[in-house]
Image 1 (tube, rainbow, N blue to C red):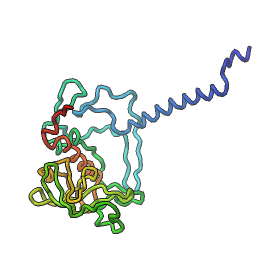
Image 2 (image 1 turned 60 degrees about the vertical axis):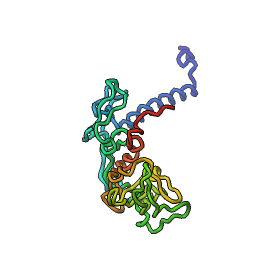
Image 3 (image 1 turned 180 degrees about the horizontal axis):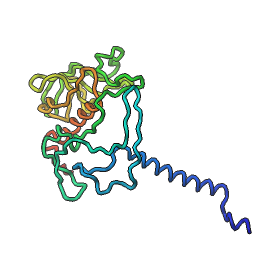
Length: 257
């Protein structure tokens, strides 16, 4: 038998190239399956199963042990989220916006949607809460820029709702995550956290455009005065994010250029 008739134009370079493509295809398949451990099976905005669940089936459940004695988590768990979806379809065709039926900022829908993260503080590599008020962290101080503590807080409609009483810092990242606002009695009671990216610090005030004065009383609160859980962070950020669209009817209307 002619040797060249068996191998044809194959050589080591060709073999290496085909082995690479086979490996790459297997890698893509594996990564796509692993990517389906969270967020699947797919659901529509109204919570019903999606008509297009995906190209591949869900991977087999896998259990991960969490650090710092926080137990374990198994994914995918295929359990639907156990909370109502106060929205109705805007059209019979999927992909159109859903219309909130209640208070979307409180109900957590649309831009105000939040994920059910664990109701426990996020920890650093040593097992300590990452985010803490600066008043409880002696080795942190403002070394540059303007210290907003003591400045009045102005809502998106120009009303002063309180003063900045503290800053909550992310110790490992060494940056400010939240401003703590002590509310005036007319706009609520106690203190609320405002996400730092949604606050503008000026020389004489701190402006929070996302929500109006009447909304501050309903900002989700934290159970602890010195810690914020991952679920609380989700709800706080979602509330302010939702306010950018839902704080007034004018914001919800289309803008024509």
